Length: 130
Image (cartoon, rainbow, N blue to C red; front, side, top):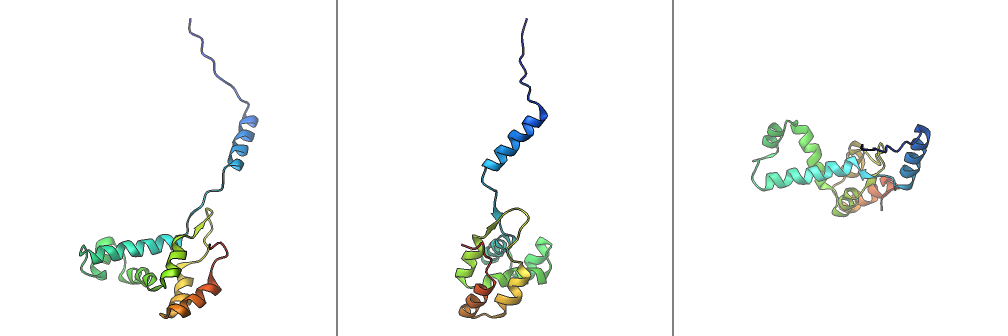
């Protein structure tokens, strides 16, 4: 005769154990949405540079974006390199976003001068930035 042992843990104990395990883990952090959008802009620019797409309009049609949306994404590439680097390393807890793309465009990207962009970014910079 074969004997099978099944461990039993009351539901309340299991819940407490899982809660304690979750509390012991460091909180998960994800790239900020603006960081993902900037990374997408770089990837799309590489595809245009490689000749995969003749121009932004062709790319927009092929990918199902509007031309305006492609322009908005590509405008992120006009940010000063140090601001781009800072944005690419922004990470946040789930459900939080340090800055929106629209706010970034409406403040920092109003100027193409990198020094002025840096001044505006310093005022706008999320407190979680490194």
